[in-house]
Structure formats: structure tokens, C-alpha cells
Length: 184
Image (cartoon, rainbow, N blue to C red; front, side):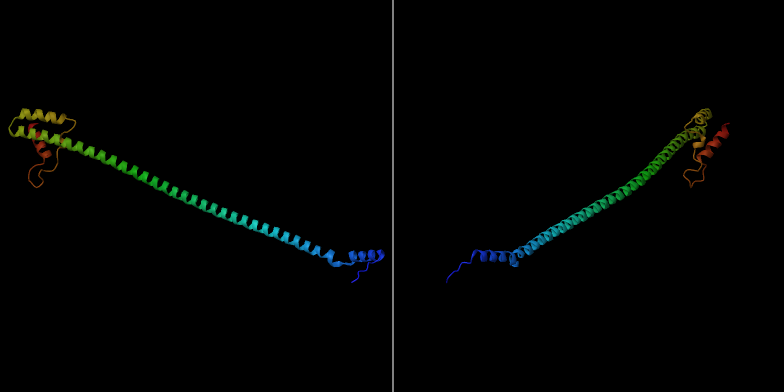
């Protein structure tokens, strides 16, 4: 094979045609570059969308947690208010029970005082009755004077009913009045 060398004019012309007429070589890089830039842009867009999605998911999770926390706080506040109302109701009940207790204690003290007065009056009555039965009238008058002057007892403290209730005798108050009328 013989290789023929082209002349310099011909070689320059061939080189010019090759450089300017070969559409495949110059244009083949441009579509690849466009594809690479488009792929990079697409990847950046996907990364941005994924980041937004993750951010939105994180925001949604935070809102759910916040909502749950607010609901828990509201439940605690409602329970606290209910307990406060129950506490106030119990305090009112305690105050009412304390008043009932103090009223009962006062009534008990009055009943004890009345019972003590009645017991003391019955003591005087039995002494007066015994002195009258034995016909010791001066002693009887002296005891009646002490009985009438005693601030803790007195004729008003004597029982009005006969004792025991089923006998046909006088009550202590009636018997005292009978003795008193006989001596004065």
C-alpha cells in the first residue's frame, strides 16, 4: 500500500472541511452536557422536595406533640379544678360537721348541767322529805332555804313526773310543793 501524501493545499482544505463540516464531534458533547445539567438540576429539585417533606413531617410531629402536651395540660387543669371543687365541698362539709359537733357538745354540756342540777335538787328533795317525815320541821325549813337559794339547782330542777312512772305517787316536784305548802 502506498501512502500518498497530499499536497499542502489539499491537506489544508481537508483539515478545514474536517473541522467545519464534522457535525458529530462538536455537537455530541452538548447533549451530554445538557443531560448532565438537567440530571443535576433534577437531583437538586428532588433533594429540595425531600427536605421540605421531612421538614413538613417534623413540623407535623412537633404540632402533634404540642397538641398532645396541651391536651395533657388541659386534662390536668380540669382534674385540678375538679379536685379543688371537691376539696372546697369537703371543707364546707367539715365546717358543717364541726358546727354540729360544737352544737352537740353545747347541748351535751347543757344536758349534763341540767342532769347535775336535777341530781343536786333530788339530793335536797330527799333530805327535805326525810326531815319532814321525821317531823324535824326546823331542819326542813333550813334545807328548803338552802335549796331555794342554790343557783345550780332549785325547785324548778325537780322532775315533774312520778318516779318510777307506773306508781300512783306524787312526782318529786309535787311532793316538794306539798311539803313547802305545809310548812309555810
